[in-house]
Image (cartoon, rainbow, N blue to C red; front, side, top):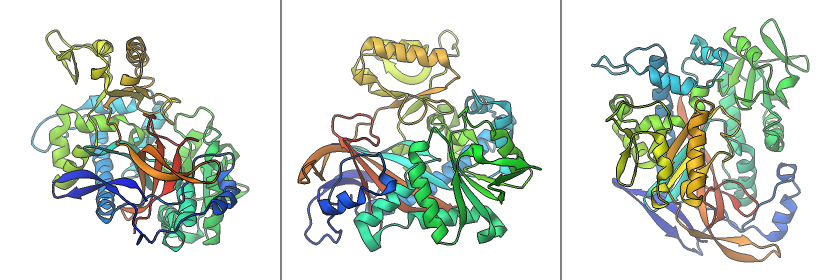
Length: 478
């Protein structure tokens, strides 16, 4: 098989290619097997290219991914401390009276007061998402980490693809998901009543959530799959089909106006009668957290709150990112951001004058907005005209803080090749670009790498996501 992955060598990282190996133990999937599997309800109304082979990762890359998971947990814990201290206007450094109320202002921008207050409430202290999924792009300089998704789809899909392609070596994604849910139930354990609630906006993921529910019930969990509006409330408790619910897996966006009973969920949580996971903490779902990681005034904070290995790993991977804040700067001051014609910016609108070469940048909504998911808000600077780029910058500034937008260096994924089936059922090589999405399930505060999904898209696609022209492939991680 042909593929590509990143490996760590000492302090350096490099990209290397995998070539066909006759000793490879990964089974080959026939076209007849694929045609049969496509009838599964999990794949209903979905289409993509299929391959006869999974996407193979070398052992040192898998070891690297294990390190990344716990670096991510450390980052999210440090982000929580930064946010809460900023909200209280407490100093964030050990030996310096330095406060950063603007951090909380960025992370709370556009959110209703009840949601902000809920995310800061004592019952939510230390609450992290049970599943984390970074999006990684293999580039000439190593992996670029463009986003941490804390409400990721694809758990059931990756599990099912793993069973299809890898057989007995498939990662146990559903099982790991179930263990994370059980941990959320605390002392109730398997006696708890669980529910996976899927919003109308996320309805395309409903088949995989129903598949997950079926699989978890076979393992003994009492779990139902429903819509948020099917829940009713009494005495700060949540009920579904006359059963009191103890743990809800939230598969809806916190900005979704169709979830009219969200405040009721929060009351149940604060009363200690319900666990909603991922917790309703919007500051953990903002892409601007990556910009805070690079913010020049926060570097000492990250040094004090991340160990050296985790911090250096993240510094190598997270592209330079900035918050597009329209606040004026004093005369003579400049913005920490990209250069235009070799000069520093005095305001973000000057970015609209950047040349095509200087527009190797991505503009996107940070979060808490209908355009902030599914690549809806993404603008690749070098792919649009000067006028369109200038308008995109102007719109981002004019709409601030609904949503807050961020700017990120565009890290171009390297081109690779992988065999795929054509419509006639014949295998042919496909040139494309890869997004690798490892899945981490949290248990006892540790991130456990349990599976990974390779999204392989045609080489002419700059924004990589699930599409009919791309391939979705599981990655063996053992």
